[in-house]
Length: 225
Image (cartoon, rainbow, N blue to C red; front, side):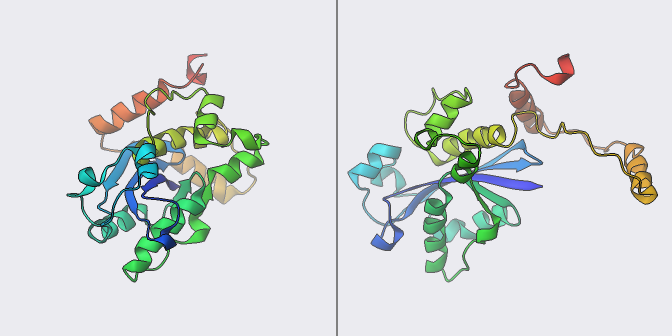
């Protein structure tokens, strides 16, 4: 299962008022595990940067002036997220902006049925309404916030990926034992999978480093017991 945790930074709060996306950050998960693959795009919004927005993310009009337009990266972005479940915090905000950018290019909206909002997920865990911000959830799950001096789409997506994994059961997903089956065909398929030869390729250095960084965050891992 492939998931993309993502975030955006913008020039304001409403795309219908002419505000634009200025940064997109994405983090890839496969079967609830970070792969180490991320994507980040800074974008020229072709407009001024309101002071209120600059104070949030620190992206100035001058910094963004030589960055690509959304139209130049749209295909790359759509290719990266294609087929994945999209995970965002207050997803309606990000989706409105991304769909407005796509609509300006006569491209279809991103599918609503492939979007998961971590605020809704947190509410389902009976987390209080006053504790639903990304900062509050990071503090709740003891996720390091020291690097978050300002908002940043990629940084926030990386933090949200950690929050999401905690919300779905902690940083050791997939430890539920499979139920026994009485179906002989299914049982034979399980045996076949167990005896299948290992892959003939090793992880890349980047994949190994990402995996090591992830497992170092796990408290009291089961394999050390």
